[in-house]
Length: 368
Image 1: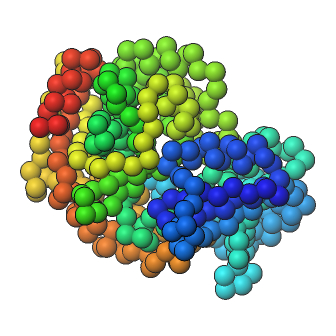
Image 2: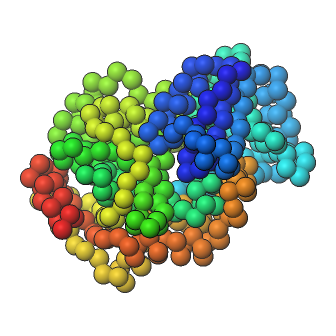
Image 3: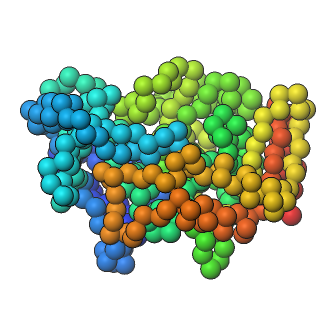
């Protein structure tokens, strides 16, 4: 087996596989946010993941997990915590099975991602499962290390980041696409999950790569975006991560998205603005209003990733060596500390927001 090493916020992740193409795909997927481990990283938390092709082992784990009455919290999503059927074989040893992806996860001294080698599932079936394991370890490490995770998208101008945050379907990704299309020299930082921490220099935001989903309806609002999407030669080529209907959407990796948008990719930046978008179809342009301190306190919980279940965390991909897991109260307090150091706005935007003139005015207002 061959191995690659990646680092994120002091966590080193070693991924081993017999499939060189899968290792290259994982490096490509996390490119920009995950770097090469430094000497300092080698003294921090380390997680090892083995990507294994073994149909017989997969079938055995599928059988024993699905016959078990036990389950384990696996993936923390914005919509809820996904639990998988599992069997526990020791105090620190557990196996779980995902029927949707036909992949088994095993955790003891190392983590195993087991897929079949007989072609019963898509040839890329292991990639999505492997990516989810890497990302989940990174998220758990971030929470345990004192960071917060926002649900939103973020772009950077001159080294300073602005994040669109809030509920699903509030226009966060569409607003991001508009900014990257219409604001000169703007750069991509994150979409869906933004890791933030309060540092001496202020609030610093880090991108955590995920699959970028662009709806056809949102693409219609941004001039030239539809054309860029129709000319795409490749999109996300890992296995599906959800059983939801994804028709009418384009799925891209972070690097693929930046290539399509012809924009730069930042791994981190100082965060200055939090913007809560509201879609107003009758609005000709946009209305930007700065929020009061009380309004910020009321709205910040909406900006939290997994806001409805902050008390829960992954059990199978946990990083106890990174520190104790924060309570729901501690996570909420962190969000409040972040909000107090940022300029927070409500943005009511209509189709007229997606013009070069309107974007120029928006940038001027959030830069003052």
